[in-house]
Length: 251
Image (cartoon, rainbow, N blue to C red; front, top):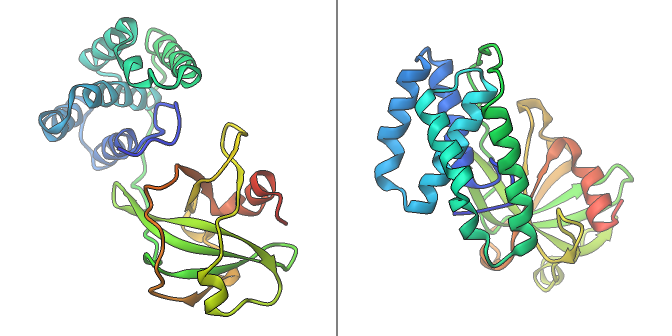
């Protein structure tokens, strides 16, 4: 399971649960019907700690949509009060504390008055055309270029987003293939503003936000490192220039 942070939806399992429940509601199912379908689809295949994630994520999205099922509420509160979800964070004391605060906030929501039910629109499915081994250039707002290698593709609830390695290079004249092949990864700050190496998962917030006029595929089928070597930080194409400047000091 891929985990990007301590938030309720900052892992691929909880994201899938969120999107799947929203999709069922958008298709006209009641909260009770959607809950039963989700339980039947997920529970039998989950390990114990993943069951905790399932109930917490389902409770969070149901509360947000004003459709909180009593059984789901009870399960989530029991998990929070027992602190059983925190066991998987034992190696990271600081993250464990942050996760505990996230869960306390969720509990506060769950015991508060339920919001009015929200209408859920059908979701737009977005799939990248990039493939593992692709090399792209991205033109920053300054006119300079950065180079990114595709090391993986993450699939969430029908969507597919590229996982990119940012090369330690910026300039206006694109180097040749041999030079690109030897480029090292650019070190930057992670989401907790600690220096280190990480891959970048990039997604569009809406269909029209993919900056295709600023992206150019320059090479295909090059050898890339495993996507499991480094942690992954998520960014949106809509805010990509700002994030690259903030986390990597490139502009």
